[in-house]
Length: 135
Ligand code: SF4
Image (cartoon, rainbow, N blue to C red; front, side, top):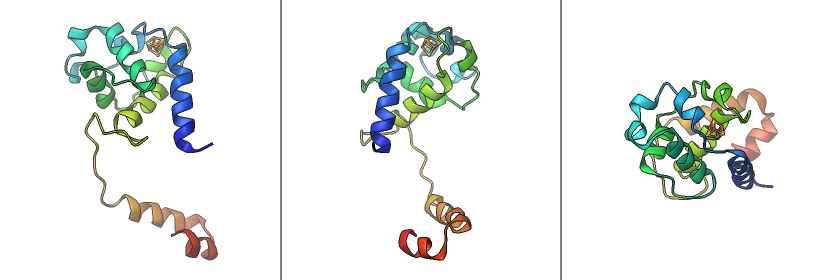
């Protein structure tokens, strides 16, 4: 199974368990910084997040909320279904940033140093032979 298949499969599995009750949205400290969330309502925003996990387009308010996530993790204990809401937001953020090849729907920060940093950390753990083959 590829990473993309795993991301899509986990997204679909968790979306199927989510009732879009809005508990995670109501618990989130970032909603004041996400345009349109208050007007749309917690249930609708949660439904939009769930839609993104189901390969859907989401809604402007849901995408604003997904983009505003700072990984506080406060949403997870707020979920009455016992779902890993913070992980769902992470999956939704990847999806909305186009991780599976879709056009990005929220801003993506470019990190020009990422490749250099990955290689620097990889050199700490890889053998010389592995470095020659992969880096
Ligand atoms: S609190 Fe849980 S069930 Fe309710 S919308 Fe959020 S993830 Fe879905």
